[in-house]
Length: 427
Image (cartoon, rainbow, N blue to C red; front, side):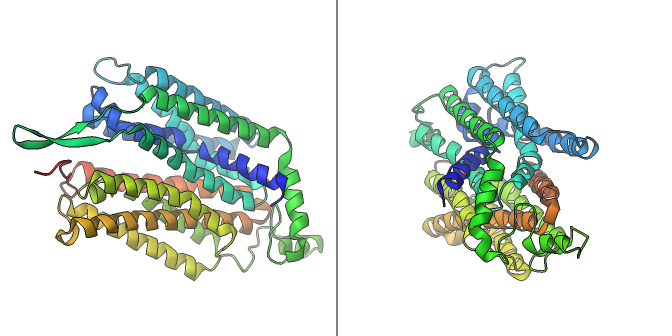
């Protein structure tokens, strides 16, 4: 990888890390927020409702995108990133402000962050169609960092460190004070998003899109039959130049149907962003806080690593992709099964259940990230001159899948007795 491509790769990773960092950072602070704000443990349900309302953002953008073709995606992305910085800075200052017994400013700034994050699926991803396909992998690596960075900061902060002490004959958790405050944590996240904004400005206004693409094409000319061009496959371009195959949307035979890929994208993201986050605590906390945090941390590490793999081991076979999707679904089903067992242990074994809980959530994170990146890359490559169009719909189906997964699990977790919490300290 030459110097220019390496710089572009790093900049795209930073840009991609801004996609969901704001919302993830607030979720990582819930142990401290719930103990400080009047809503208590009902706070997550309020925040979940705020995030779902913010999903109107992709809908509005989709309508404007189809009706107002003159919209500048670059300018909108800059505005969205600046809005995220403002909201994160506002949270750092006003997160504890309440009125009428509600954390009104927390809800307001959370709505702004969720609006940016939800819209990033249909706004940020199509922007990557302007770059060489290899940099799309960098974007998904950045998406993995959007959960890894807040998670690592939360671990260093010590948000859930506690000891079990005896109170009136029963064991109760005694939480230790964090190493640094919620405000400092949120300022650090705001600083990271500012860095991501600067990275995007460099990508947008230094004119590196065409340069990086051009250099990559020059390097890859020895593999014309394998490496797609910036906006379509070489075979499609050759047909167009020779006057054959006038339909530029003709799909290369080596790629699955984009409609099937979109369906699989929705299935994978429903599990990744809806099902597993809803039940992971029930699947891990009965074994220990260590099991829960270890699974969360390792899965957040596995996600960006798995996003690298398609760069070196691309899969385009539909049977293989379908098999991997089925395997990821079975892994997700096992995590749900562990959650349904709560507060009991798998096979009445704390050690076996704890190990399998960690392994399952890490494997699921790796498979989901690999498949999400592979589906997006396939859609980008098979789109011919319409790669931006298919990446837009890829973002739409990511959001659809995430919403459906969350909508399915929310009532099951909150309004049924299927999932029951385990005591933090057992007598």
